[in-house]
Length: 147
Image (cartoon, rainbow, N blue to C red; front, side, top):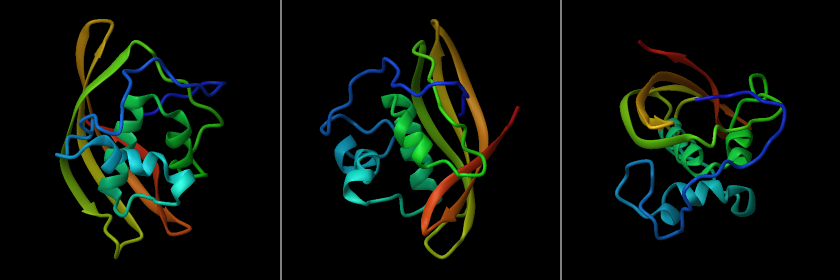
């Protein structure tokens, strides 16, 4: 779920509040779920597992939070800037499989399906993402699209 560009900015996305259902699909409010990780630059809280980071990054795409996406991207693969397509509307996340990625691992993978609408057309992104710990925090390294 990456898109490279020359300048960072937030896309026009539906407003999320702390009380909104979390876009990641877990049965919690955004503020108590992924929102707390998005605020991590202020609170110091980071995702405890690769799956939690995957979910929070998906929610950041929904929220248009490019700062969080860049902050949680591995320094070796992170683009210098990120611009999200304002016509992209993410509509659901399904975690298909995870490998490692717990508090006891240094690496992990998360395979997922993310549904979206783009200019009125439905689509689905199926990807296996790789995660690694850097300085104790989980970061996104890269992803492989699955047909």
